[in-house]
Structure formats: C-alpha cells, structure tokens
Figure 1 (cartoon, rainbow, N blue to C red):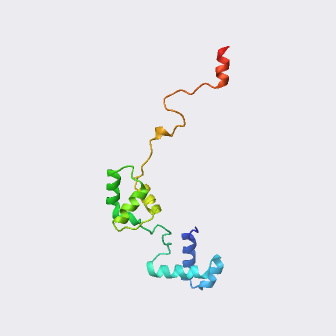
Figure 2: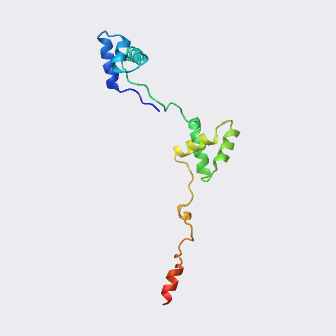
Figure 3: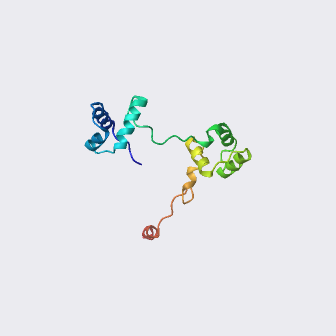
Length: 140
C-alpha cells in the first residue's frame, strides 16, 4: 500500500501557494502532481491542516454488537467449534462468514487451544530408546 506524502512536502507546497505561485508551478517545482497540490489546498481550507486522512482501519467487526452472546457461548462451551457458532448465529438471524468469526474470536482472545503437552511425537514421560549404535557399544 502506498504511503502519503510527508508533511514537510505538504507545508512547502502550501507555502509556495501562499506566496502566489500557481498550482502547476508548485507541482513542477516539487515534482508532484497538480491534483495533489489542489487537494491539499482544499483540505487546508476545509480543515485548517494538510494532514493526510487515515488509511485503512475504518471497518468495524460484524460481530462487535454480538460480543456478549459470543463470549457467553465460549464460557459455556470452551471447545465450541467455529462452524457450530456460525450455525447458532444464523439461527439468531445473524449471517456471518467463517473467516469473520475466526478473526473476531482471535482478536478477542476467545480461541480454544489444544493442550500443549500433547504436541509431542512420542509418548510423554518416557525416556527415548537407545539407538542401535548405543546398544551395540554398551555390550562390549
């Protein structure tokens, strides 16, 4: 994603406009598009600043209005499957995708994690068997 121009460049452009230079002259001098200079001028007149608007982050979570219900369901059934939650929400008239549920659950710390101790490949609590080389060398 692109980044907005720096505030320094914006201030210099507005300073040159304030000194009476044309938009096209300012744009050519600073090597930017004339439309950028026009938009900054309009923003300065409208808001009093040339500060760029926020990029992204405008979208609210679909389930934010139903946070209490989702939290209560996970408190009642900690290992609740997301597909099950999706069907329960649809029964309540709330249509939401699996991905949206996943994002909401993880963003709110409601995810169910399996027991970390069970991630081992071998049986827990037992020593590893000696390798064939170790067995052969211990006989002598």
